[in-house]
Length: 415
Ligand SMILES: C[S@@+](CC[C@H](N)C(=O)[O-])C[C@H]1O[C@@H](n2cnc3c(N)ncnc32)[C@H](O)[C@@H]1O
Image (cartoon, rainbow, N blue to C red):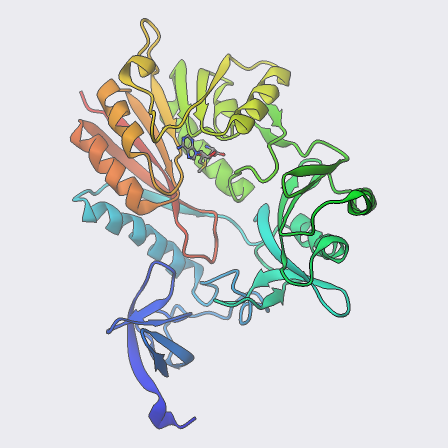
């Protein structure tokens, strides 16, 4: 290829996926603002990218798999750059709604701390291979020295390969969701061969041999050597297979610290989008908690954990679709027992309907945990329009080296 066929561009910013963006727009993966790059323009993408003038924020990627693996997007940028960029993503989302606030220093989870991942695993002529898909590709990259995953998850790679040899079809790779639990690996396998008697026996043997705490094939339990419990404060909870958990223990602790601070002193707290009790159960150390969530199985796990724990205050649960059927002011302020604080941790869409009702109910303190700065800023605007103050935001980066941004924020009602 001649240099004449190459386009030269200057990267002005990072897009939502962490790609560099030049005028056009021209998207150039793994580049940084201020860099001059060259490559082949294919539509709005630059391929075969060469860095002509590197940014001062460019670093040697810490992981040897980064070049081929699609699991991470920002290993070529310094931690300081990523911290400032993620903070700006939230600041800009707020500013697009005409809002500003104090930002606490970002909390970034350390390398090798991801407690949960979905591996792609396929059979090969010689056996099987487990890893992550490459950048925008179906090719699986093996990741024995991955810098993202907890050591316990790295130890799951050969186990996932053994599962593929037993039960992957030749056509499609398995999707193996692995979660590190207090009792060992919790593994959920999708896209496998249908379970029959022979496969069931083989999988149960593998579970025993590799000491998998729990193995689930599609939606069927295959083996449970030990309940794969997670500790939430004083309680131990066995979540349903594949259930949501915060991505790292450190990120969870940072979010929880914010939630505890915002709700301190409240005697009755409502936890909305409560999951398996990540926040409800630690909060129950000092307050009565009502946990509301759309998935019955998660609340059953939360409830069972609460019943076995010692010294916690009362926790009640309710299964409810909070998008269609948000808690109303009369639910939030029942006679003589109003909730003094709310925790809300919705999925990416945010919580437009529930936030409108919280604002009407005038719940005095709201701890908002968000995985999407744009829906967060929209909901923040609604609370502020209703008389709340956005006191501070703490960005929590538990998806290190990705373009994902999470946060916890304090809202209080102004007098
Ligand atoms: C980001 S997770 C947070 C879970 C929990 N707070 C935690 O930290 O582990 C969002 C939760 O919202 C629940 N959810 C999603 N859509 C919902 C809906 N329409 N109504 C109620 N809960 C919903 C999911 O099941 C999930 O548990």
